[in-house]
Length: 327
Ligand SMILES: [Mn+2]
Image (tube, rainbow, N blue to C red; front, side, top):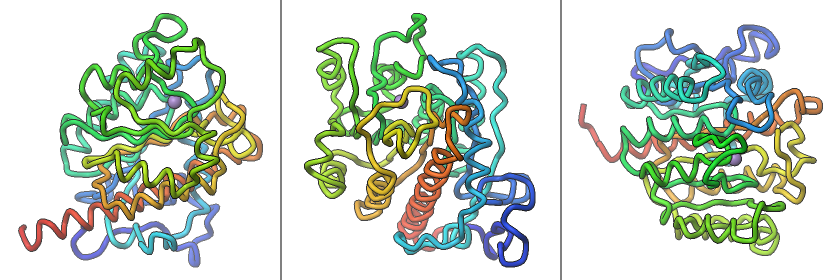
């Protein structure tokens, strides 16, 4: 935690919420503080997707985040007062080439993890999760993954034969042992598949799954029970906004009908606080503003990001507690 109190966002009661530079939730930028507990990092890249537009996601989520307030009531935490949370801006997308951009993202996230911060990234297509998990695993070791997504993202190759497409990254993460699939959970899967064997191939990697139609029967509590039985620390949470039904998140490249409500998604994320895991990294990806209507998707993404950073602050508090009075 920051000593002498955290540098927080502008107070909306003194400085109107629509004014100022667009950092996430009007937080300070990273250069304004000596150290940070939680860092927001933009990853505006979408060339590993079959659709473009997610490159504009970080800016849209930041714009929607201006409406956030400081107290997270369901989690009973004031994240911006209890910890130093900052916005580090965007990783520079080097080109249209995935490999170089992924290297830039991995390096940026690696520096932040190396400083002891927890990293919450805003995408970008889902491929950005791969370099983000590489950086998190380099610091923390093999990760337990909680993936909220309409799609498994465990295909062998992307549409153009890409190894690191937004549809293949979770298979790559298994191959590179960034994640421990046996302690990983995918929730919200649905939609037509390329082949009858696709889900079986996904589960054969070790993932536990809760399909969207199964969620209908077991509800948020059932998902949290599966999370409690499957996930471990250190935890990485990846939220592909297409986990939401298109009525709640139309602004995404590969929408699938029959998805979660925003209330279900937030209920699941907040419920993680009761499990007590160490959340070291997270992302909210696939927000594509050109397909969005009235910013609905960006608002949902900003809300999910606020709950994720609040969970990170709760994790930071618990870790500090374990360390006791050690310097
Ligand atoms: Mn995905």
